[in-house]
Image (cartoon, rainbow, N blue to C red; front, side, top):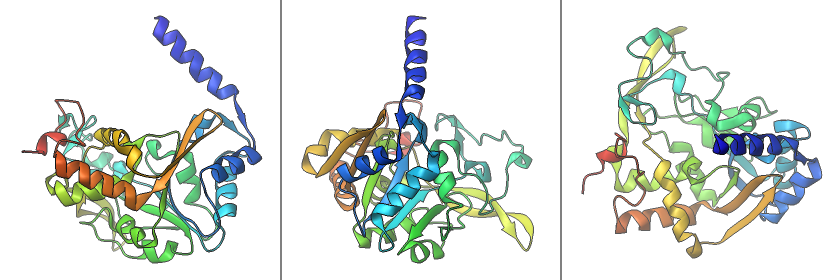
Length: 285
C-alpha cells in the first residue's frame, strides 16, 4: 500500500513540473544537438512533466535546431494491424486477437501509432512535409533532408530498412524519458547475430481498396537491451534532464557496434530476464 501511495505521489508531482519552450531548447543544446544533425528520436512527452505547447512545441524547438539540412526519424509501429505469434510481452503464444481476426485494423498512413511510441511520434505524423512509410506493422515517420529518401522504399520482410539506410548518414539517437529497450536501432545487431528472433507473421493492409493480409518479418523482445548500459563507458554519450525526464544522445553507429560486440561475447547478452519470454528463448547456444 505504501509503495502504491508513493508511486501515485511521484506521478502527481511529475504533472506539476512545468517545461517551457526555452527549457526544451537548452536541454537539446546540452545534448549537442545542432544545425544539420540527423536524429532518431524515442520520446515520452509525459515523462518531462507539463510541456507548454505539448508535443508540437517539442518538435518545433528540436526541428528549429537541426534546420533544413537535418533529418528527424521516429518509429510509428502499429501492432493493431499485426497478427502476432505471441502476446503479453512475448510470454503467451498466439496473437492478442485470440483468433478473432476481425479485431485487427488495416494499416493506413493515418493510423495512430501504438501508445508506447508516444504523443510526439503521433504529432510528427501530421507535421508539415513529414512522410510516413507504408509498412503495415513497422512504419516510421520522418521529416527533413533525408526523410523522403529513407521512407520511400518498404519491404515487408525488412522491418529495419529505414534505420539501416539511416546509418550511412551517421545519425545520433536521442532519448527523452525512455530506456534502451525503446531504441529500435539495437535490433540491427540482433538481426546480424540472432536472426531467429525475427519471426514470420502477417499484417493487415489495403490492397485494391480492400483489406488484405501480407506476410511480414517481425521484431523480437527488446527488454534486455537495457543491459547495454553497462558498456556505455566505451562510447561518447551526452546526458541531461528536461523537466523530470532523463535525456541522452549518442552515436547510432557506436551503439550498434556496442550491441554487436556484446552479442559476440554472449548470445544471451541482450536477452531479457523473463524465463517465460518466448522471443528470448529462441536464442539457443
